[in-house]
Length: 149
Image (tube, rainbow, N blue to C red; front, side, top):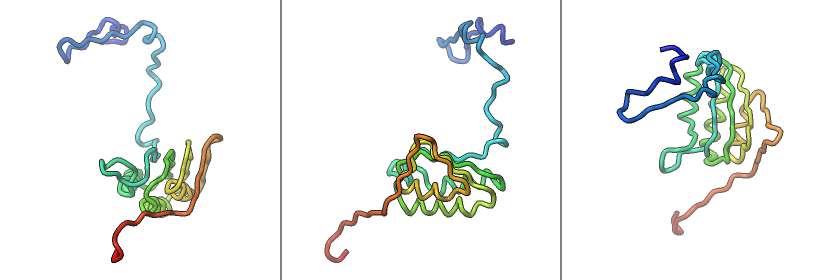
């Protein structure tokens, strides 16, 4: 099948499902535009709260460590848009990034607050979006228990 055949092609993998590409979309299609190859990409995105919640969501040191192992001995860019979270998890991520052998560039895309601001300081080069926000504050905790705790 060629690209010219696409408007006529029907999906046959699932019975009852079909798809047509509009001629207007086909005219704008650029086959030379492709996602960056994995070899070219050395970026880590921190776009969630820091630390795992009860559903397992959130950015953890385990995830960042795995990403850094995957990237290997190459410069890395860390894109941050996070409200923060667990300070100690953020501190572990900070230390992982500081130990990376190559340059670490941090881009604050929107907000790097609380624990995410600690992570942002791990960059050799820290870049802020013109409308970005960095919030640094003293840590706080919540404790509960009886007089023996």
